[in-house]
Figure (spheres, rainbow, N blue to C red):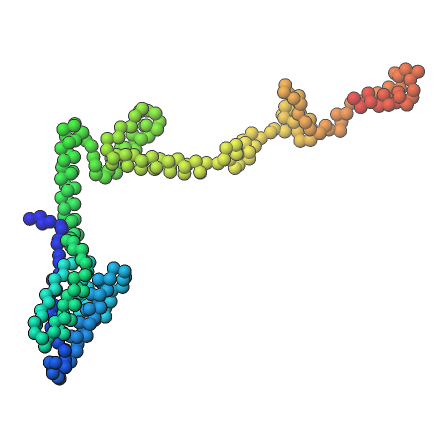
Length: 290
């Protein structure tokens, strides 16, 4: 049988204050006198607690002054119901004790209580209740999926095979092989997001391992030079220190060899007689240089 997880508990305190007789009137001695002094002392502390509870402007209540007041902390003020029975002796010789008892009862009437039901939730019973509710909700959800032709919907964690299958669907969706990725349950959404994260991490790792854009891999130029060596006898390949052949897009730049200088002609005989020697010499030198 399933019991209710709510447990109601309470406390019951029965205290006999043993009266407030005067020691000089009773004439007790010995152990009885000692007990009477302790009783009167406890009653004095109890009266201080009652006075503090009756004063609304007072914050501190001296519950810890005696064992009696500390034990009655849950029975005086707050969440409790307090009943006091005052016994009096209507005789002239007990008038002082009767008046003291009635005054104490009057102070006790000023104490206000706010009694509420003490309800405690048993964790074991509460756990059983939640397990039962989860089981019933799962059965109801399975029935709803069956009636809606959604019996293939899965709510448990995916197995490795199912995760690989879902990862393949996600890759097809990213490569635009399929237009839509149908999500039929919250569990599938969680697993799909996990696949997206896995693919993103793999792509980031692959990109971080690639060289920067525009940078040739190390050793590329050496491999190209070794793969196509220049032949010494090939006239199309310029030798070191020489000017290469002219190309359609420009002229190769280099150092001309010493024997390739053109023959200098004596241009002094070809100049005009009227020209100055200095100008003619300068002009001839410029033409020779060109």
